[in-house]
Length: 298
Image (cartoon, rainbow, N blue to C red; front, side, top):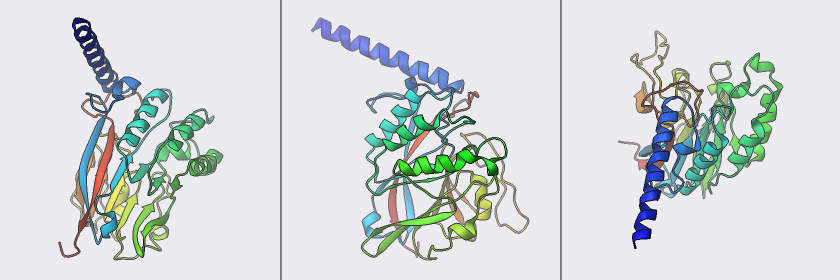
């Protein structure tokens, strides 16, 4: 009995020390395995945010389904592969029906050193209704991104991992005759965000979720049909959106969380990875959405 108590106290002390290490390193901008609790029940620097996501005209089949979003993995020297593996394991523990990835899978990977590690981790994710992804600015490359031959290679590898990568295109999840549309856009920083192309096949009354890495792109999505727009990019830091003179949006900071911008609902995920920059009170995030039916009249 005494030995059991001593052992339990030792485990508690270890978990506490591990948690504090994760907090300290995370606050300094580094992501290590100490940031994630393997069991999913203890304290951890990683935050699993849970909220309902109302969608108009959502078919009954999709009501209550779980969509998990992760963003900004930034597989690199400052983001431990062991940490990302634990994050992927936590995603699978949540038993998502759908997984959404919103870009920046690697960081400055000119030689392709991290791509293989990334693909193995992404391939381990499981979601019966599919895994859907868009691209982030880092995925295009650092110098002359439009000419970066590694982009095509990265896209091919991500698709080989069983992920539907959407670059200015749309697809849908179908049950009977009912559909839930998923739209993925290119990144705005490299002038590859083309909503006219991405939304071309999406019906105006159909329930739709859009994936775009940079929340600033919402300026260009006001006239296109999407019930909610999922993004990342900010890592929880402050940024300003440039407002066009004829756009009915009040100037505000797009930082993190759920918000209404103009006529759209936007969610900004703080991301999993970091660049090695201190970010106080900006914990990495896995977002768990419960899809909820919202009648067209409400």
